[in-house]
Image (cartoon, rainbow, N blue to C red; front, side, top):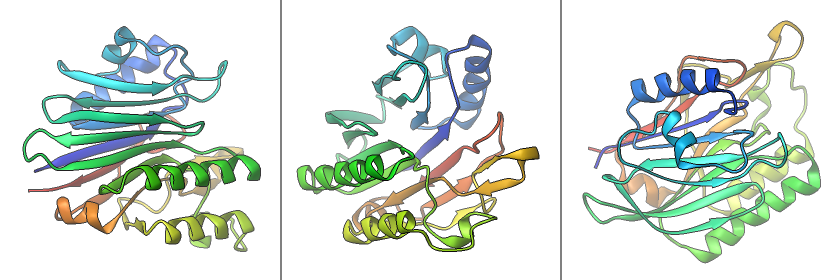
Length: 236
């Protein structure tokens, strides 16, 4: 089964002009599932989801924003994926799906990572809880708000304790970090956009790769500042 998943921190989908940009982009990509972070919307609704280019047959789950910050939306084509269960965390949203075509069951976790050490530790605990709940093939995607390697930030001079803990979590959960095609970094910011980092990514288990052959992770063109969308595509 062919599958296309898109992850994108849109930095706010609460304005109609921004939603038009997102809608055009999503329609052009023709994805089976998309996860957008930092929606800044509470509460999410069917009308808003449709205005984001979710297609004619959408289903969705969301973490509402807190005030004007955060928020996460996972939306999929229900002709392709059937939702079986879902779990909400503070910084992640996990959906257990069954492929309509072949009946394979797998889990997708959308992520919008926090900035502080204590909150990051809570996110790593959320990942562990999901792995304890479901042992199916697993794919995680989103803005983790942290780099995994020193080379993933143009100004990174040392390996921080936060990066070490992220790497340990990836290793403990048996996750794989796939190469990124189309560019080294997924975020630009700072003075005159001189800071670059890879904050956005997909992580998968080997069992997930077994279900979808030839998986490729790609950075797509940047429709709006300051995050690039990331596409995960595979299957036959």
